[in-house]
Image (cartoon, rainbow, N blue to C red; front, side):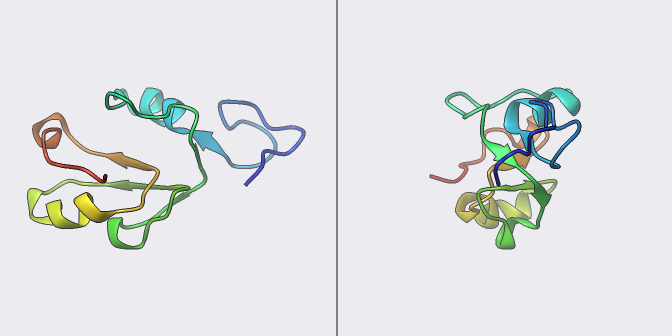
Length: 88
């Protein structure tokens, strides 16, 4: 989704589009090494139904298989799960 003429890089005004870097900052997190901080995200979705413009989360290691195969553009996870293998 392209940002509208009134949109700001932080998602304020115009369309409801945020970037991965803004999401990380808003939740007090960090981006994984090599992550694209400019990736736009515009919706929430569960790991198994997320697409490249979705934000999802992983709160329990029992969903590690879904995390490894998700298409989510951004996945929020606690530091304790940061070493799980993520999407390729």
